[in-house]
View 1 (cartoon, rainbow, N blue to C red):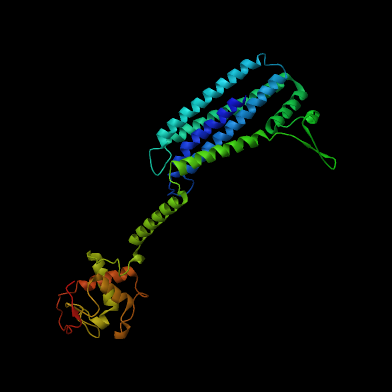
View 2 (cartoon, rainbow, N blue to C red):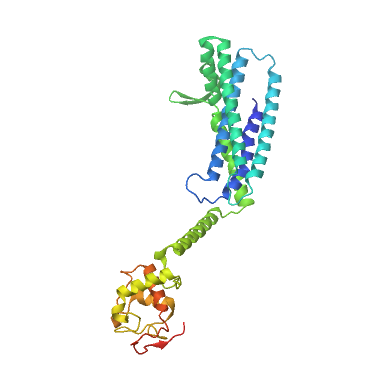
Length: 354
């Protein structure tokens, strides 16, 4: 496999990953566990690794065969390898386009079933190719015969992975540098390292282009703001549904018979001594007229019960009654207005029509 085929194998998944980065950036994770964008990037990473493995195995297979003169027409095979690489690249690009069309419609991004199975199919196909290459290499080693062939194949694999020069040829790459008898070899960088380095460069260019040229450059700020907005919405929803979150600012008067009945029970247990059985007033003020000392309406009544009026001898009930219980008894007290019970205490405070 020459450089052209290798570049096709490397660039194809990177072009494929460009759209994935864009789709993954739109993701807001709302559920526990692995997010769809993380799964997507993981699957693409597996595809990249499999492509690199296939590249090495193909090169190893070629070297084993050519070392034993089993390839009669090396030039023709190179052409076929190039054509195969090009076809494979176009095939993967077509799959990637279909995957983006199928999975890039929803926002925030959620991987569609079609996209998942397309990627899974690519992984399975590449894995099958890698396994087939391994089986073929094993068969060729057996066919070539013997231990020498096995040792040679192992050596070829090591050379292929590291691009190192055999010991017997090290004199050809020996440099003139001499450090106290230690001489330096001019070995090439390992291909696997170079490929990963190229991938990071291309990935960085794609990422920078997607996010800072064609997209929103304030990625972290945008994500932070979205997450804060989501958290605030969750808090507001929790406060709305949580009984303990009720206070004098958001309390609403209850009207259903069950809640009013429970409020009456709370009143009979805790308030009768000062306000009378029917709210007519005793030590405390009359609760049935239109005059109030500390404001009328559900919010003012709730606050008065919650905080108490120590100067007038009324204790704070917030340590003894829950917010829901205070809401219920406040709602019951509001129903006493205009009942005109016998023995009602004279009006106190200011008239309030709320």
